[in-house]
Each structure stands twice: as C-alpha cells, then as structure tokens.
Amino acid sequence: MNLSLSVEIQGSKEKIWQVITDISGSVETIKGIEKIEILEKPESGFTGLKWKETRTMFGQTATEVMWITGSEKNSWYETRAESHGAVYTTRFELSEQADNTVLTMIFGAEIVSTFSKFIALLTGWIFIGATKKALREDLNDIKEAVEK
Image 1 (cartoon, rainbow, N blue to C red):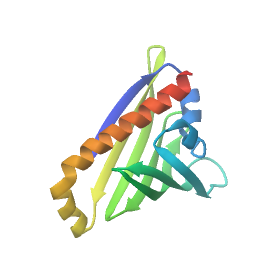
Image 2 (spheres, rainbow, N blue to C red):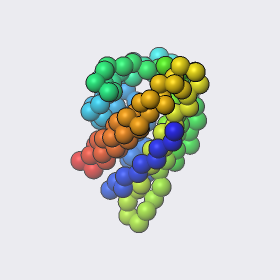
Image 3 (cartoon, rainbow, N blue to C red):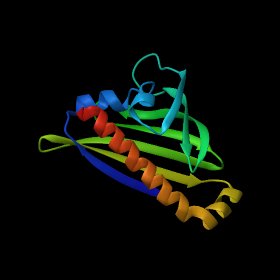
Image 4 (tube, rainbow, N blue to C red):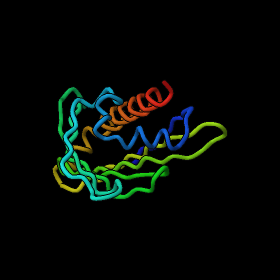
C-alpha cells in the first residue's frame, strides 16, 4: 500500500524543514503524537536519528521505534519502522510552488508476514482510510505550526 498526500504551506522550505525535523518537538506540533523518546542521535546530520513515538491509532495507544534512513536538508527525508509483520516507510518532500511550499507525505506499508497478509485481506480497507485521515491531520498540524 502506498498513499501520497500534500498540503500547500505559506512558508519557506527552511522554516518547514525546521518544523518537520524537530522530532522531539513534534509532540507540541502534531496532535496525534503523545510522547517521543530519542534513542540514538547521529554524530552529525539528521540521517540515523532513532526514536520511540507513542500515538493513538485506531483507538489504541501504540509505541513504534522509527528512524531516519536518508535525508537531504530542506528537500526530503525518509523514515522506517518495522512492526506487526510489516515495514512502514514515510517520505517527506518539500517543493516550491509560486510563493508557497508544498509538503508531500508518501506513506508505504509492505506486509512481510503471512499472518499480517491474511489480516490485511480482511481489514485493509479500514486501515487505508484511517491512515489517510491520520496523515492528513499530521499535515494540517504541520501547516498550522508553520503558518502561526
């Protein structure tokens, strides 16, 4: 499954980058995130940052370990998490459009266990709708934080 959502933000790529790469501060920015615990910091740069993120999804509180797998400052970064028989990736991309910046979030889920594949067949449509809603809320929270 792959989902791609975008939001146009009145702000520079640099300002948006500052907000979206402040992982510790995302508790204050993104309403769905309840807690962040930084596990590893790279010696330099952003790639390699690893953290635990707690949020409520599907009515349940869940904590996932996530890490930055690649990045280019003021342009894009990618995260990865592995949980419940699946690999989840998210890519944040910034592009300029007229006087604004477009932030695009591309979410991917690759199911790797047989049991998870079976569950996905039964409930995948629910997961897609809920995930799209959560991604849209995250993007709107980021937009609000940048524009205020």
